[in-house]
Image 1 (cartoon, rainbow, N blue to C red):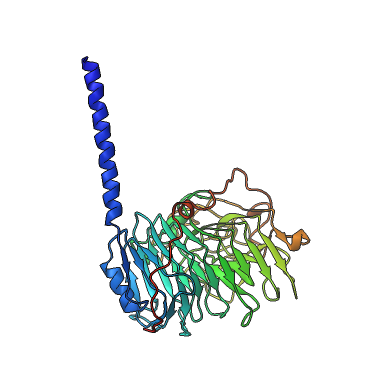
Image 2: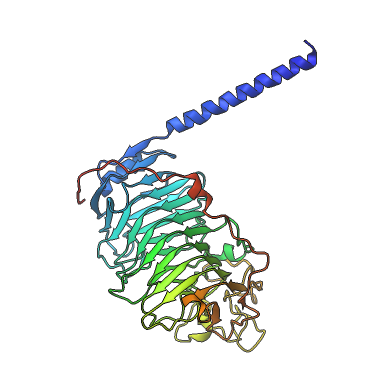
Length: 450
């Protein structure tokens, strides 16, 4: 045997050893993952199961109907799995009193690495009104692989789900029933998750556009429904604090889409970026709202959405663009003030104060910080127009794209009803949908209230 042949043989042996070591490691990692089944669906039993679980485990919540009067929290990387919609029913009975009370029934601080998932649970309001609209569930953290799927949310005293932090991943195949008229289905905010309350969306507004990439929280294949017993329409979702979102392939029944600008939220800044496409809207009574999608700040794309309006319909476009700090002078909008051409936060390109800070059609700007930031001239935000195309209301019989409700937001400059040049959507379904299977139900248990 030559030296060359001996060396090649040694290399082959090393590769085999490395391969076998990898197989053993993967097997041992899989073997270490466990399923911890809570004794009942009660809050104390679920808390015990969460506390005993390790990162990578599945915590199974059995079938049953349980009222939680104490909140539950975790910061572990887990799969939290119920027995299925209508089988595992968790009711919000937690006090909504002010601080130091914690009003959410469940808080999950999702770790940065690995998959975290919630699936197969009905979360239902318990009729306790929350004046601060804190929500039933709070998700926060810096997760890049978060999935919340095949759940049902029925808020009746507060909003259903609030997301804080740099959470990326997908919320899919859920039902958000907002028929009670109290509380939206879903709020998505973006802040520096490990410095709570100190970012306000500033970092996101200082970063470039990321449309068409995975750097967003995706909301796809969900149903947002309202039976109109209380309101003819209800808001399905909202969000601000620099959030970056993709809403696609959802069904909105007597519900509408909305975001916030830099205005009524105080120091919290506008939503930074949105992609809204291939959604289906229907409204049985159009009275009371000018469009299906209300944009109050940021930039994005709106396309391939369809809408049907019957019985009192007057909505004739898919979306509208607003600038509250210019058109609504009934509020102070601290710390920003009004956009009227004299405010240091805004531009002075015309007598209207154009461009208003974080208005629709604006993108990356200077980095701000501090609870009471001192303006040093306008933050020089880049023009980043909104684009809308191929939207249809009632089969396309009416103007179906985007209109402006504010003089400072102009077509042909801040928005266009044409295809966005160079834009391509991120892959659908989201990779986490195709890489994680729908699990079987958790172990059944007798109905119990706790």
